[in-house]
Length: 202
Image (tube, rainbow, N blue to C red; front, side):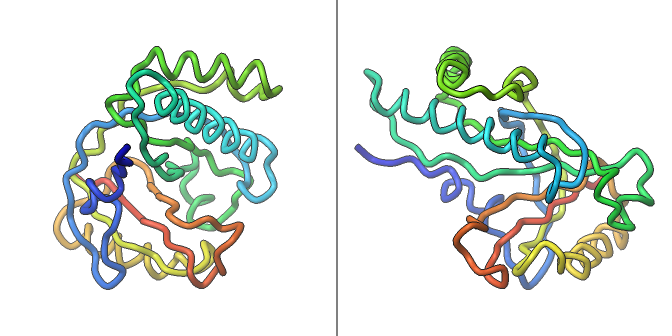
């Protein structure tokens, strides 16, 4: 059984250089999504959202792997859209006022029925009230700029500035700040964390 890894198939979207900002075109993908607000370091809602997303994503994966089609694939990384009603709070890193949508992309062969069954299975095994807010949605960003950030999240500032300067030199920013988390922060040293920073542009 060959294992499908969309991160490799979509290398231009999920493995950018850390040396320079690149412009990309991001097509529409289906995502499991949960919205919330508050400091991701302390908000219980954030931790519960991440747990719910991965629980459903991995349950769907094993349903397909053990089912009649026997499809095996790598679960995609956690992604986050970040913003604030008052963007000055976002710029000032007042995380208590941050809003977010955490999400995990779903391959096209994972049908809606599989996701529905996975949610029901997780509900029967775990008391995750956050599951009531989970949705499956098509999300298309279109024209974007992105770069890989190496290191802890607290040191993203200079990399974000490079990203914004690249966009501002030729266009203008649109949409929400987008991060894609490629590292398991429970195991990797912070200096080795890999985070894709993506920003839609007009």
